[in-house]
View 1 (spheres, helix red, strand yellow):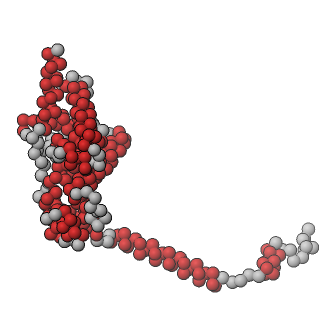
View 2 (cartoon, chains in turn green, purple):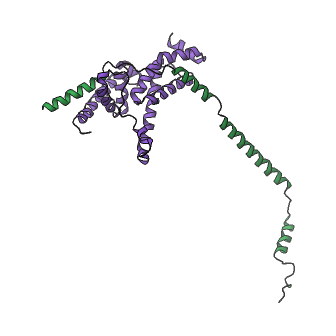
View 3 (cartoon, one colour):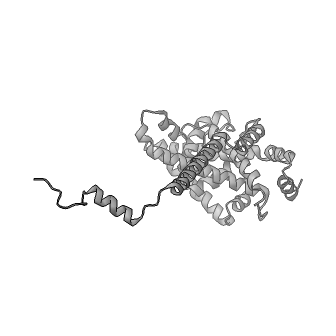
Length: 99
Length: 189
């Protein structure tokens, strides 16, 4: 019982330990730190900008290459395709098999 | 200077007004954040973030509450974000049991508020540990009331609830703290 009273007393003292607590003070250079953080976040990040430029350049080069390739690509007619097929499978003469 | 004058000056980007706002609210914000976060370094970082947020979003502020209430709300939200982030870290800390991450995630232990009287330091460390275990709303209310010394009316405005709800939260917080402390002193923790 005595022990229980002691615990209760300890609990009450602990709860009262922040009575009259003083306000914690912020860093005296708080404003300076805030303004420097704001300036840093406002400035464009160089590496991000560089990455974006390189990505755009690569896309542009790919696009130009694709267009020029399609332009210079020879047009193959159906007849030419047939001829190439006949030539590839040696179908010009079906009796040219030597035994 | 009235709230509306300050807000108007902040909206025009007047640097002097920024500076004055930080001077007026710097300690209040830091104290609130420190009470909730219970880590000096994190509290400094969050205090800076709070003011950056205030400066960035002052144009969106609709003036439906006082400037002070709005700043307290931002401070509380930023603190809660960090507490949740730290909890997530703590959940995964077992994966890094031998690294510093565990210590960092555990963070809240042995916190001594700088404003506590010297003879109360030991007991207040136990109390702050108990406060950190409270549910979010009770923790905020208890901190605003006991650590920041705000009235129930001010707390009700900040938390957008009735004064009765604040009183009820404070009562429940005290009951829970008593339970925790009784267990602590009987060696059940």
